[in-house]
Image 1 (cartoon, each protein chain N blue to C red):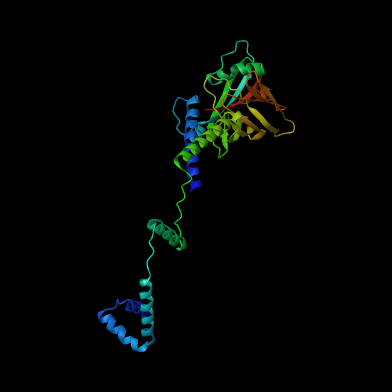
Image 2 (spheres, rainbow over the protein chains, first blue to last red):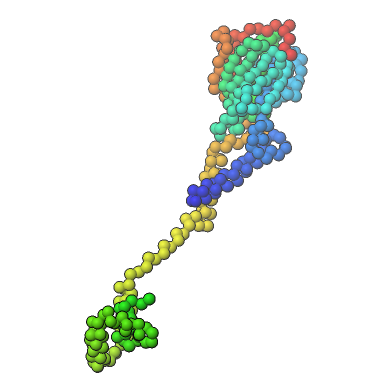
Length: 171
Length: 168
């Protein structure tokens, strides 16, 4: 009886806090739509990938809207002046199954994700990524990604430029 | 049905009457010795009654002492066990609830990851735990750029792709 009562009290308290936490997470995200449950919030997380061609041009064009948030960093890190989006793909993060990202016909990514529980991860994910060029595997990596913290992969040189794969968790 | 002893006592005291007396007197044929016992009992009674009765000075005190002695010699009936008070009284429940809230709040603050609010620059950057190039000719180097909050996996040794290759 005592244990049952103690368990019930604890369960109610934990439930109340969980609801509060879910609301906080939902309201602090970039989406304006309310998300009543943490599962729904987690289900809305996406892994976004893009294949970018970086080149140097005497009259560089503006980066496409999808790349504007990365353009300055790409310039500083890779030193190119123009960034062209070859393709992009986004998939909902599914912690149960492997996902495939196909931002272009030539470059694919296999993604297995699980939520990182450490507070420092700020709601991010531990990803097992495999990068393929056509059917050839190039790289397998384990990386922790969180919203707002992109991962760039410097790929092969292409023509007079450089291919870059961009990965980011979107919420 | 009264026992013979009970009827005998009543007979000695002269309290048997009517049919009971007649039946008892019939039984006396089987117990001739009781007639003599009755005579002795009556004689003893008369003797006691003939004695002067001393005055009882503190009748109430005497009665009280007597009742106490009777009570002390009477075996006590087992007292019913008091029902045990429930441990989780309302104040204790409230206290336990408050304690649970504090514990749950602490766990929430320490374990549940907080999301980045819009416009806030993330202090967290992507981390590459491990990188395994698929080909020995490929090398992977991880570069962290804390100023730009970006992580780069730098692949070297990848074959050049000519511009004629269709990427899309």
